Amino acid sequence: MGGRYGMRPFVHTAAFKNLNIGFSLDEGLASPTEELPVFYAERSVWRVYFQISGTAGHGSLLLKNTAGEKLTYIVNKMMSMRAQEQRKLENNPELTIGDVTTINLTRVGGGVQSNVVPPLLMVCFDVRLAIDVDQVEFENKLHQWCNDVGGGIELEYEQKRPRVAPTATDKSNPFWVAFESATQELGLKISKQIFAGGTDSRYIREVGIPALGFSPMNKTPVLLHDHDEFIRADTYLRGIEIYKKIIAKLAEA
Picture 1 (cartoon, rainbow, N blue to C red):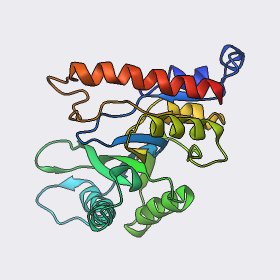
Picture 2 (picture 1 turned 135 degrees about the vertical axis):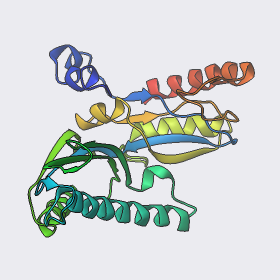
Picture 3 (picture 1 turned 45 degrees about the horizontal axis):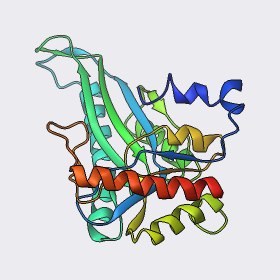
């Protein structure tokens, strides 16, 4: 459940605070190339339900202000925004998926029977807001669309995570300096990125603790949660040596 019942409440307990944690090293991702990604931030996960009400009646009529018309309007608006983010990603080779907002339609529900115009329809979107998005402005836009199409739409959130400040990756952060120094001594090629999914680092960063996501698994396909996920033995053993070097450097920071 994305740490909602684990790390999210744990970081606010006395037990966690008594650990006196100064830095967190969390999971990263495999990389099919020589370069290794280092994740210093995450997008904000919003799971948005539009509960859409409209005029109900017999399917033989052309009723006005129906839930189906409103649903179509909302879906078109969300998909248009999705297409904008796709173009942004495709037109800039320096961007990764974590740099843009992703929007995906994940659930649709409603209806009474096949010849009845329904009084209520539901559509859900999984949204991952990029760290440069104004969240208040984004939510206002959702409400504006609901009003523009005639109202009668309620927004519900399964998740609505706030923006969390990224971990500094410059000389102001001694842990980053130590991490980067270790990778340079090891001759590793690293790439600073924003994580596309969600890890417990978001909750750790939220309470002001710097966190990096890193897994030394280069030349390895990204197959997380897939069938036949694997790592080569030499990559695994090399990763242990990489961690030993990095952890020693971080301990001195």
